[in-house]
Length: 302
Image (cartoon, rainbow, N blue to C red; front, side, top):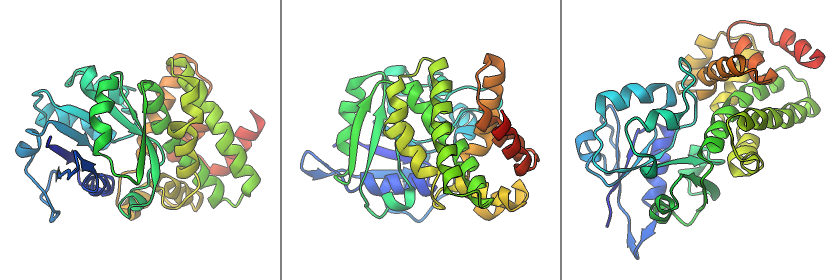
């Protein structure tokens, strides 16, 4: 059997570790290992050195930390890498593909997208995900590792998947604000649907496939993340609507909310490239202290 390891033992990493250990490969159970910065009492936990010897890696390290981690820890020796994070680097505006390709050849890279709350995956509840890669053979090697309760699809629209996964977190913050302000379901549905249009507009600038945004990677993940308190980013929005400080919200959350930093990256890129992204821009301004009610007025009048 080929060896596979999840790097990153947060909730999503642990959920993927669980799922990949439920799969069958060549009629035998596929053992999946896991590692993280600090040792955890998890079955099949290994050291990073052992993890990097595996042929297949699933990396679930937050997007804002990955460049530093790869620089300091990663040693490429032919591994196939499936990226399980969703975000855009805030300081540079770099997409994850840009960062990973400095360390791994494009043909050995793939990216997970689609609706996938960790708390449901770890219970074995059904969902569907997209494995995005420029190489179809990459998908052909990886898809059999996934269990029966996860339906996988292939797409070569890596940039579309990346933008969908990153952008939906920012829109989930906006949706949480909308819910927290008690603006009603009409407003929330309007916000989410216009957010999807905005996501698509941003993606079109970078050459993404329009169909990606109405599929699992775009609409599927957005509808999930922007409508449930299981979403960390949605809960950030709820906290902002209650006039909590961002510091207090993140401390209560105890987890990374990718949309916070990604909003800064989208703002940076939209300004530099003259892309119309009013909802994402307002989220960034609210995170920096703007009154949500003022943002509402500005969105309604723009």
